[in-house]
Image (cartoon, rainbow, N blue to C red; front, top):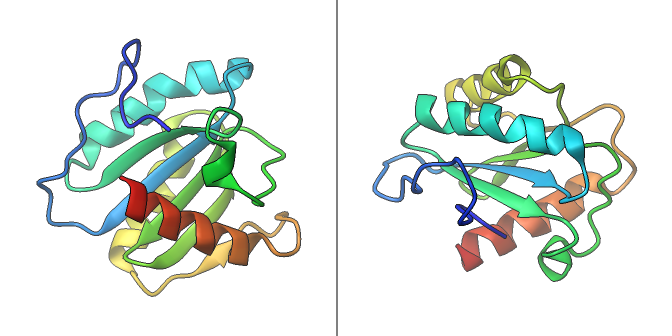
Length: 136
């Protein structure tokens, strides 16, 4: 997992922020769509300086991702505190993710998996959110 890797365009994590919002992009090194989404993810991070943004490679960090099935890239996990607000794939470009992040900030009680998510995704996403919070 990499909040910022040496070749990453992402700025330093905003650990001093007051928000409990965590946004994790679940990606794979071989995914060219993820490569292009990286700049969009950096833009989102700049627009939400109080949130924690993590770039998680599902293969390099397979022990962290554990049993969460990621079938489509990029996939976002958005959590507010210990609550999963969203887990699912997003279209490349910042607009869809921006709306999801804003919804999570406006309504911290929101809790939803993508309608296309495989069964059991919400429980696996909840476990991943907890592991991310503990390890970062």
